[in-house]
Length: 570
Image 1 (cartoon, rainbow, N blue to C red):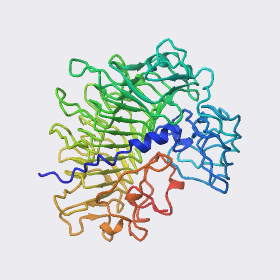
Image 2: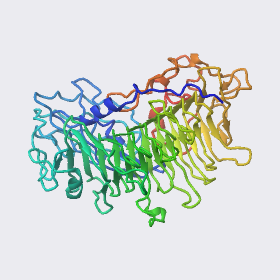
Image 3: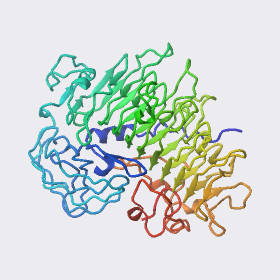
Image 4: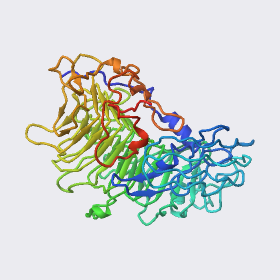
């Protein structure tokens, strides 16, 4: 079958805006820095406030100040470059997915420095999909971003030395800093390219604690790049880039490239990786998996990790690699429970956007939650390179007929080289709710085959094609919530039909899906506006609240009856 538009979008990737905003300390919402399992287990890890004189983003008076104090006592961000920060307005309710009810921002303390303000500015709750409450208190006068960090923090730089004290005047190296930093403190990375010829490992016994993590983030608004392109490749066991075997680390705003294997590999528990970009690595960009083959018990596999507002692209296991393993994101083979991807985008990887593969040798993995993520153009790199060995799916959700009940909500797959969402032989009770797939070369949704059924549950999903050329019917064996899914069927006059009275056409969308551009909002959350329904569409209020526990608060997210597709009309 000829391949349709592969969506080469080299000019669209989100790295510049993502890292620029991350360097300023933005967090999509304080509550979002809690890793959350579908059953409600939460691991609270404090995030950073925004740069500027006050901790957390504040409005310039009036109502609707958004609180960024995250998790359990988020650390407040870097001081600004001078001037007086505006007082926060009274906090309007905001609907952010994941995480609990944000506490009051609290009065902020002294000005200046990477930790201007109180170290416990607001305590986020542990529920789901919370609303932020009141905005932060009045900010102190903004200090210089170049003031010394708190005692116990460390500064690293590309030209740092191992034995240096880790100050602004005498920075140390990243490899030295990760062994020296204490819980509750931060490694601030200065601007520039950090060249490594070997893997950087945070060992298993090098951990923070729940509510008191160890942190690694850019200094002020700078842009650190971890470049592992000098690692040996194809000569045996390939080294990774940054491997986090420790638990309760908060890593934000890194660009990681060139690793001979994974760019970032997470094997500890309760870690948060936020606003980071992995690209050009020679295996999956960011992967969750066990630290060692000796960890045979799932109880020792990584659990309750949150991957938030990250991007992964152009990862390729080039020759002598097989061109079949480099995904954007993966939580496969050996992962425990409670791992969450939220607000992430994966595109133009040689294999899959997301890979949740299982195999008989290691058995089932813990259910993974994917919420408000986008996967597109996988199977073809941004320079047009492809490999016939790549699977090319948007979201690949299983393997080897092993049942795992993953949860995928409010996500979008388009222009992938094979399927948008696929069971990949997982017969378990996967729950797909409010997802959109369009223009995926070999079909938008594929679940089940003639010999194997599935227990998948489908609610409020939409399948669509923007052209009549080379369209493919969906295969969806499982529990189809009546009247709420619009599947594509080439045999019907109206190919995508949600019920006997509702058909899906291009007029149902507020804007054309052809040539859509993926962007981020100022708070680093993904902008889903290009996928929104037209206010007059009969898909609005045509759904039902999905069954089971959701990774967001249904009562605050849905307006009236749920809409079909990935975006709720407000």
